[in-house]
Length: 276
Image (cartoon, rainbow, N blue to C red; front, side, top):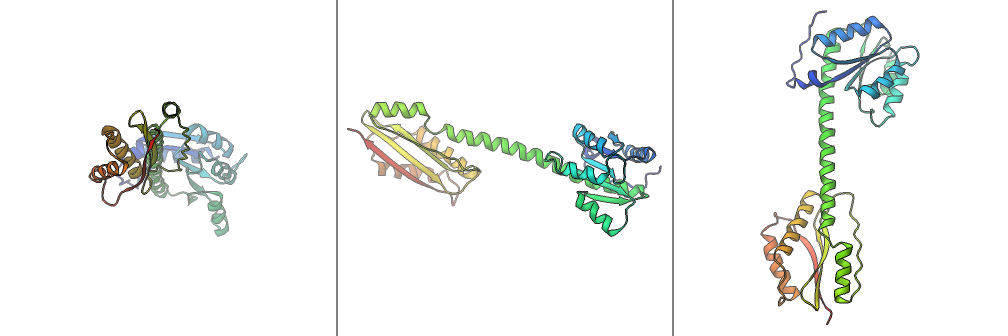
């Protein structure tokens, strides 16, 4: 078998890491496709003789590319596509169909079933190789994006949890309620994305308790980072007992302005409860 197609992509991981599943009932045809792929350096290759075996192999092997025949016994390619596309874990797998169905209506059925692309039989080897490389390159990008998204979602969730840590917990609230003989109730409902909202209390002296509520403009990473900036500023430089609320807010505004990027700001309520 001659290699009349040369892949010009830059990423060798496409060959080294890609997993390919061949689903074809004709054993000779499977061997020819496998040999073609192995000639280009692919090593992670599995085979199935029909759609039913293909479904099982797909879930076990988790391929990046499925080369699928549509006309097979036991379970044909149409039923295989229907099952795989209905599974959220595999509905994005690339399915390259090889088929003798050349009628326009049949081709429409192939795409409606969930195929990514197709080549007609008899398969021209350079076309099979070219389409395999193109789709594997896409699959590698999708896989990297999915991994990146999962990592970012994990980090964002950790950041959201960190936001709740900077607010008073039940123990702090109970201690303040007891020390000042007041009742404090709170409710914090985070949005689906990171935001810039938080509240807090801190003791000024034996008679006075400061309470505040902050809402930074916008959502996302910037707003969340700004809450940490302000919280750190407030707890690094505690309010002096002789400052009134307005004077403290003026002091805080001057210092926070130096830390915030342009066009970012917060709305803040700050009050002092004098229990005496």
